[in-house]
Length: 335
Image (cartoon, rainbow, N blue to C red; front, side):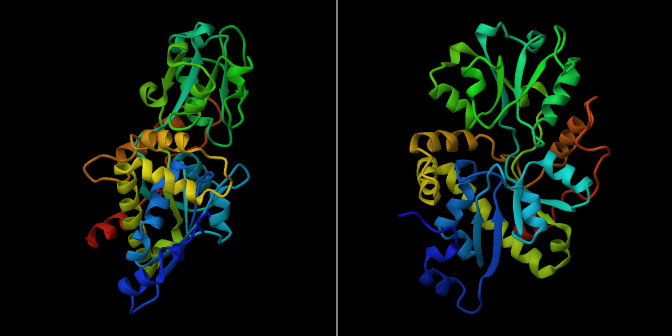
């Protein structure tokens, strides 16, 4: 039987023991994508009772191809959303004041996965090739990279042809593309499951190419930060979230199985989720400040990548006020 995605499933006894004197603060978290180990830390914190212990009654909403987290936040359907920094900065520049209150990943999982049979061994071999790219905001690091390499993205022998890739790996198998976009923790595994071995592939991680941008972070509206009570609730939410991710990193198989318990689609498999959690663990913030801290230098690098493209940029100027350490510092004060 699948678990409901609220902390009420953890148990009344735990609530009474931890917060008998007051009701828990209700918060809703909107994920960027469907239920999978990319978000294992949140589900682990829910399942292990960390949110209840922090006085948070959390509801988690899965995402999907037709769900824009920022729109859900703007419409009042969530208090916090998981999003990638390029998308969040673009949304902010368009007028919706998103603010990053915590950064979960400090490394990018995005890469181009290419067939060696296409003759691609280095980025200099991209000329004349077809490259699969995700759009809806995910294309900007790629476009910046191509600009950096001096490639036009309109085809031709000295440029590259861009294929608008769906969220699958089909173009690599049906001959539509020489390279496709993959995440280290998801689509790359699907490529391997499809029968291609690492020896048949050439990988170009965005981290290694100097065009990586910050991915899974936590965002709220600026107005939430004007209310001390909401900041306190968000600090407790962040503390429990960090606990969940630390637990998931230490217990990848158990975390993967927790994700499966919350997956109503039935589309996920244990093997894939365990592999995903193992790869995700390598992306989690590991600096001195730990999970949840947005490194200003990493923020600046993302902005540089987004502003460094000759193509239409996702943002047109250096953003101000797009992140805050207020909630992170309040979380640290809880220890």
